[in-house]
Amino acid sequence: MALQFLKGEHFARYDPTAFGENQRALDVDGERYELELVDFSTQERDSHYYRSLLRDTCRDSAGVVLLYSVTDKSSFQKITTSEYDRLVLSRKQNFDQGGTSFQKLRYPYPAGQQRFGCILVGSKADSPDILREVDEEEARSWATAHNMEHSEIDAHNRAQVESAIVELIRAIIREEQKDAEQLKFAPETAGAQPPAAAQGVKQKRSFGGVLRDAVKKMAA
Image (cartoon, rainbow, N blue to C red; front, side, top):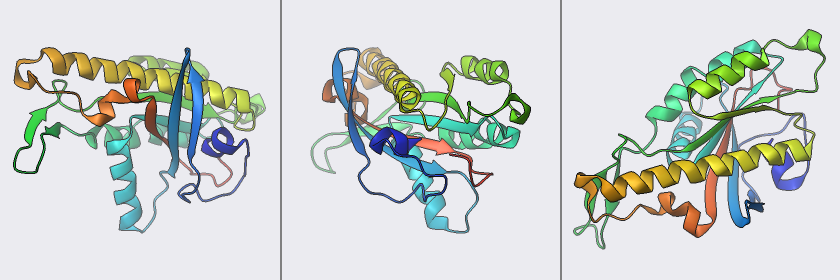
């Protein structure tokens, strides 16, 4: 999905953590945003570095796409349970503000942790019905219960992929605005300014990740 959005290309097999050119500008609701997108598979790997990188990316991302395959029920179950829980638990609970390390003050996020934009996306929507394992209504209900948008896409279809990314950017904006408002009025953060990650609306730049379960190698 990330590759289709960034370059208009699609590969059945590729390394989702191969970093390269992963930035692209996109116009959303009359404003231009620069999105840096990284694609991560949740498949188990022996590398502790890989899991640490995934955790750190989820912690710092302004938004995340939860991607599963409509033809693989296990991918949906994993991405909406253990992987979503890990994502939520990885978020920052505090932020520092000040000049030097000696002057910095630590403020808590009023919500308990930094909010982030998130959408649930089912890939392989073009597959025959006989291959479908995830009911669209089930996925939509889960997304609604977690206050996020849901869509199904054909990862080969650039327009559908871009539409999903537009929804991600809108979700990022909403959540950053919520954090900014709460930080503004919460007594414990009086006088604090939102950290850089929460000023994406002004900076017109966001960092996002595609978190996907790759139980089946051909899932993309």
